[in-house]
Image (cartoon, rainbow, N blue to C red):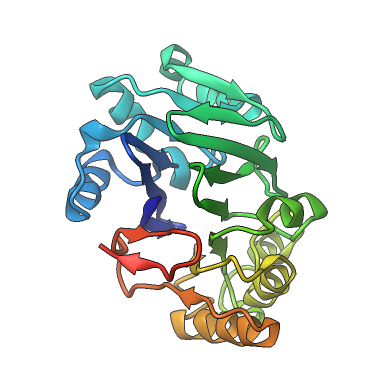
Length: 266
């Protein structure tokens, strides 16, 4: 299995994931042009995309879909709530090749078995995913307000995790953002703080975990150094020797994940 985080912030989110002849996008929240450029930057072609998996309906996760689907009809896997919300904001989306999925019900896309699971976020029926290609397992959880038992169970025993480290609580409280926004971000349907992410990480990390990609870092209320320091400390406490992956700019290098091996950049 190989993956690259093409973009991850409130400005746009998308991740490339591949195994054999199956290539997936998880979310498509950049402009279509930017998305295409990012895919080409990791040495891949947009024409290779087999399907798109959508976590939720917020614009920073779906903004490219209209242009992508106008150019080429690519199957889109999303929950019924997400489909309804996207179609409500764009009536033309009703004609897209949606495939309705349900949290807790696994489905297959080419070489990938995909497990969607519910996450608490202020969106219409949002989910995270676990992708398994028969060899390696990647857990994907971004845009969630708190770690639930469902999330912990889903992310346990993964080879790699793409996990939200949105904000440092002190930086959020001291920021110039409106109090209502601070409450939304730190609330149960908002975003994970570094501390919350580390608490979840310690609960799910096992000796199988080889790679961690901190996701959706706030430009104003977090720093890459703070997120990485907290993640490394948590993993050190757990005694799990994980390669913590983070790049100063996206897209991140295409990384290969295999059980029993460290993650390697392509």
